[in-house]
Length: 402
Ligand SMILES: Cc1ncc(COP(=O)(O)O)c(C=O)c1O
Image (cartoon, rainbow, N blue to C red; front, side, top):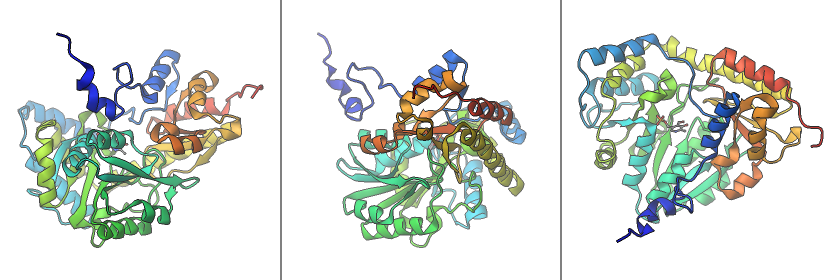
């Protein structure tokens, strides 16, 4: 007897499978393949191309030698949970109980998945900003939730407060806030975060914050939503070591949340990965305890890189919005005569030997059309790579026929 295709229902319903049953292809995969086949500089994917602090790498090697190679505890190793709690106090003045309010996860990716799967019933609404990190839509779909968005308005990519008020309602179960923001590089002002807390109270919603770029804010202190009055008891704060310590491949993330909420998330997480990355956990504890100069240095270094790449893009004729944090800069290709960012990204390796990704990949159809000429470029690369990319972009030859 042959098996019917019914088993594909959930993945297909969430838009994760194409009509032919293959994994729905993404522009990210296409652009990375294009970078490989053309030898172009890949500024499409957001991962650093150099190692992070040597103390952290050495601590991982040491942990392997010392035998930290079996399943760690379900909540995460005490040394890392303590370091996370100490970090929350040190940087944000937040008191977090390392034994009840901290959960180590397989990257922020798992923290987001476990949180949404734990908190959503079918039909519950989740409000995110748009453009949005693609995982949000996928997991809301798998949880049979309803994804509503509030657009980030160019050129500063901030949300309109009235739009937040009209989108968040009594059906909203989760307000999912990514700050600093991927892909736009926006940092939300305190008033917007305060409004989100106010609306969460008004509609009895939970707040989930994705703060993986918390240490990559350029000119202002990062404000965790959980630090605002009235936020803590209804907020799940998610972060990751990958971005701060250039260890994206280690997949060490975490969340902090009030005990009851955390227990619900743990109940799901234990059946996703159970645990992960034993020798990397004590190493990230070492990273979190590095002196302030490390953290300010990371932000200053990335700011310089963002300005370097932005200058190259501006010289090439793009309209560029200056990011305030994170890994990415958004450039508008319209002044160069391109209105379709996806088509432009397919041509860019030939035109300038550089790869980016269209912002439309982070949008539902409506905003995708409005933002069709915007392209995201990653600047979390070595300075010489960015210099080369900037030089190539500055030489960009736009075909005369356009
Ligand atoms: C906004 C955002 N959230 C979550 C993640 C995933 O983080 P991790 O690699 O720790 O799973 C990323 C990675 O690019 C991201 O940009």
